Image 1: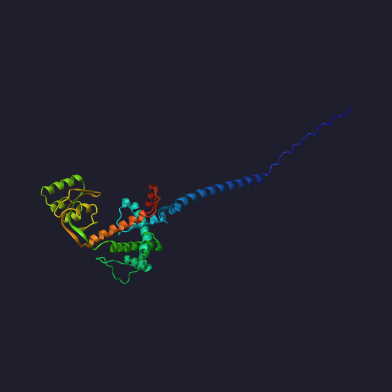
Image 2: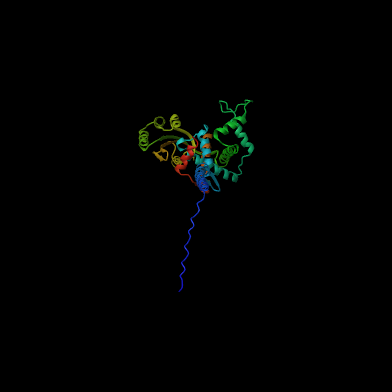
Length: 333
């Protein structure tokens, strides 16, 4: 008779626990790993926030003019310059849009002037900076005080507007380019003699006032006295509406009427974007010398026409929204 063998019982060996000091060491290591990772995450978030607010924000493109892109850093510098420069009159409420237009126009001048063989030398920039720094006399001329430290004055000025020397020299170069371009346009495009009318003008703000003045003139009212009473332009009010001899282009919104009007006649009220005008032509000349003040106005119009043509032929893109404009303005206060 066979005998069954009983299977040997399985022996279970209990897992050996690490000693207490080893467990405490592992826990400490885990805690330090957790702390290190937490610090790294926080540092990454802070770094991203800092980059986003203090690096990327300043490098953000603001405007592109053809192949040139100008960033937020430059925009803020220009905002600060025009807000703190007493020689430049800028409407504070429209400062960002006006400065943006200045930046665009300056870049168009820099890109377009060489095509007209217009350049500015480094010496001209230096001379202009020195003339701007020297104290001026009451009549506007520079004094000849021998002990004026222009270098110190220049450093103080750069510190005030927060420009580097290179940045400010580039700005002055652009200003000189604009002056030379304006002079070029005056010499090439603005005549010294032209057809003119001896013009009287009464500018008023609204249609009702224009009708009232027109009715009084038709009833025998005196043009000069009515101009002094109703004109909304101080200079024309003081002169009794007399604008002198005027060529085409000084009042382009009136040209089609005043240059077809017979001498001695008065127009009906003329509606323009600036209000209403009533004009009187007291004399006509086929050709006569244009007064310097009106040549200056015609030169400004030529420059505006040149900028308009350059704008139409260029690629200009702006990238600012209202929140970014507000942020930029905050940086100059």
